[in-house]
Structures are given as structure tokens and as C-alpha cells.
Image (cartoon, rainbow, N blue to C red; front, side):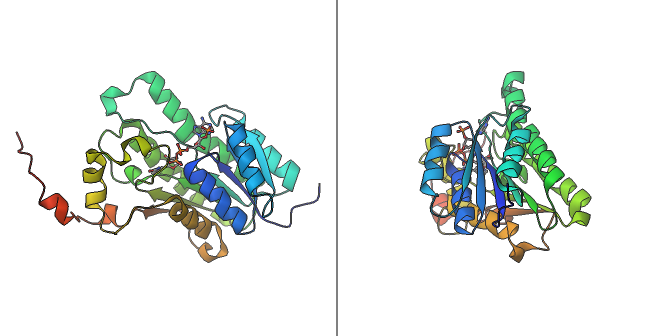
Amino acid sequence: MAQSKKPVVIVTGASAGIGEAICRRFAEGGYNVVAVARRKERLDALAGELSGKAEVAVVAADVAAPDAATKAVGIAIEQFGRLDCLVNNAGIFKFGAVTDVDDAALDEAIDISLKAPFRFSREALKVMGEGSSVISIGSVWGILAGMAGGSYCALKAGLIGLTQSIAADYGRKGIRANLVAPSVIRTDMTDAFWDTDFFQRSNQEVTPFNRDGTVLDVANAVYFLASDQGAFISGQTLALDGGWSTTKFVAPEALTAERVARS
Ligand SMILES: NC(=O)c1ccc[n+]([C@@H]2O[C@H](COP(=O)([O-])OP(=O)(O)OC[C@H]3O[C@@H](n4cnc5c(N)ncnc54)[C@H](OP(=O)(O)O)[C@@H]3O)[C@@H](O)[C@H]2O)c1
């Protein structure tokens, strides 16, 4: 198969939310896409939607399966003959402080949120060349722990280590690695608690910027980091949070709300 003229990106967790938006952004920007997730019907629908802009190879796989990365990278090479960017996006989130996380939940979280990005990076790095990059979706909860973040905070912090270690070892080959760390973005992952008082108080009222972040904000940041515009940026964690993690802002409505006495 002849090599694709267009650059090629693998996006994990491409069937919904942030991953779907990243696929759209890269297709818009001239990439062909390898879209990975379990829900094949959603990936097929995305491939249909993007067909006028990009070729989308659908890989219906559980990223926790040990052979998922080999399969996805194999398809990128078979179908397109090149791999320019890997976006480690697939992830799960469950509230739970450390003592609330049993071994089964811990293993599931580690398999999806840390082992899979590690394996996908390893297989991608074997075929990537000069100008390529690995971008992982972490979280501000990997920089500053959030309440009941248990395994999520630990694993998202682990992704920062993976990113920096790729930057250290593969920079000589002209390969970069970066991580985008969003605060809370409305997707299926966050929909259940988005409108709750807890969420308003713990997130929106301590975010200085005047609107919520969107999946497109995340996709634009990832696309920028992959592009030539970001060509000397490597090993970085880019917080995408409207100022939440760098300020002690508290909205006036939060300051005037009824105060809960400390015991
Ligand atoms: N939303 C936020 O507020 C937020 C904030 C910070 C960071 N993040 C991170 O951003 C990433 C995307 O989150 P999102 O909000 O877009 O979540 P989402 O709407 O729940 O989508 C999750 C995506 O990951 C895929 N996925 C989950 N487990 C998988 C598995 N075992 N194998 C293959 N694919 C799997 C899902 O596809 P299938 O179900 O089809 O497999 C889906 O495409 C995650 O890493 C998340 O931790 C999200």
C-alpha cells in the first residue's frame, strides 16, 4: 500500500466526548484517522460523518486488551503506511477515595488509564519518525488532587511521568510527547454530576474564566501540540482549565452563600 500523503493520527476513546472531538479536529486539519474504541457502531458513524474530509480506519477494541495497541498501530501502517501522532485519550472515571477503591476497580483503572497508554506509546514509538508526537489526555486532577479522586489522580499523574520519559528518550529522534490536562468538560463522563450543587461549588465557582471548557477547547489544544506550531514543545503538561489550577479565585456567589461551620 502506498504511503498516505496526509499525516495519520491514532485516537483512543474515539467513540464519544473528547476523543470524538479530537478526531473531528484532526480530520479538519488534514489528517487521516485511526479511531479506537469498543462501540463499533459509533466509530462507523463518525467515519461516515468525516468521509468527505478524511479516511477513518475503525478499530473496535478494548484498549485494556494486551493486543489492542499492536492491532491499532498495525492497521495504521497497513492502511496508511505511516503514523504521525498518537492521542492516548480513552479513560474512565469513578469517584472514590483511596480506601473506597478495591482491587478489581484498581486493576480496571490501571489497565485502561495507564497500561493502555503505555502499550500504545510503545507500539507507536516503534514506527514513528521525525516530527511525530505522542499526546496524552491527563487531568488537572493529575496535577492537583481532587476530592475522591483515588485511583484517577494517581493514574493521571502517572501519565505525566510517561509523557516526560518519552520526551527524554525519543527527543533525539525528533519525536515529542506532551500531555493536555483538562478540568471538567461536559461529556458522558461528567454528565451525571454536571448540574449538581457539589459540582457548581467545587468547580465552577472556583474557576475564574467566564465559561465552561468544551471538547473543542481540548481538541484544539491537542491539535496545536501535534502541529508544527508546537514543534519545540515537549515533555509538557498543559492545564486547560480556565485558570482553575493556578488561582485561588472564588466567585462572589460562592462567597455570599450560607457558610457551613467547621466542626
Ligand atoms: N470530561 C472531563 O471532564 C475530563 C476532564 C479531564 C480529563 N478527561 C479525560 O479525557 C478522556 C476522555 O474523557 P471523556 O470525558 O471524553 O469521556 P467519555 O465521554 O466517557 O468517553 C470515553 C471514551 O473512552 C472510551 N473508552 C473507555 N474505556 C475504554 C476501553 N476499555 N477500551 C476502549 N475505549 C474505551 C469510550 O469508548 P467505548 O465506550 O466505545 O469503548 C469513549 O470513547 C479520559 O481520559 C478522561 O479521563 C475528561
